[in-house]
Image 1 (cartoon, helix red, strand yellow):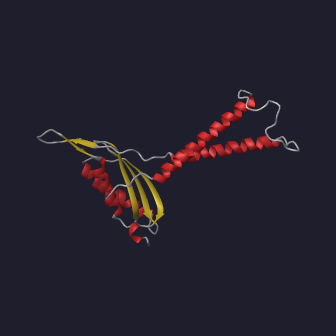
Image 2: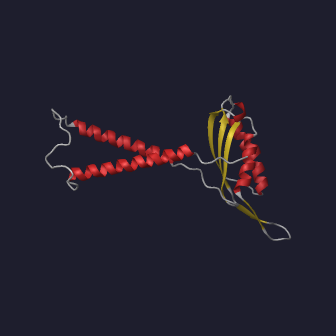
Image 3: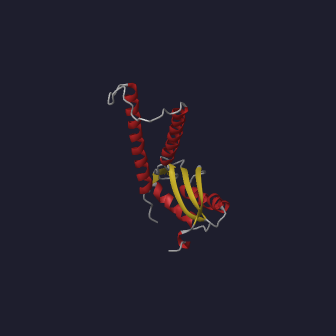
Length: 194
């Protein structure tokens, strides 16, 4: 099965958020420079906005608090955009027996086999798998999209009771520490209506 490319809209989203963040930082630095007099772009005595009546004293405080809240929410959103799956790696195992040697396998081979094993189960709509550390002690990151009509416990039971034991047997390791991320409510590819 072909691997999925990285998500271009998410990459564009992160780029645009970073650009907006840089523009807002530049605007804040400019405003701070003007207000402190270090950037004399305006006459010291001329107001930026002329209002017929002066604003109440609480308005700047409310604006400052609102700005901080919006800034913190924007920072949280930007950090959420930066979440990435761990990078994959090759693993190798020293051969036991009369002939010394090492077996090396790219992580993609084991990942593709495990992914195919997972999506064959009816409760799992899609899966992404990543071996995140090489042998002889690999670790695993699994992201499961559970079918909308299925019980997530079935998907987890299939992973723990069937797919992981087969992976451990194939890699010839006693255990594979696994990080699991489950998403629910997705329809399987073969059940979608065009």
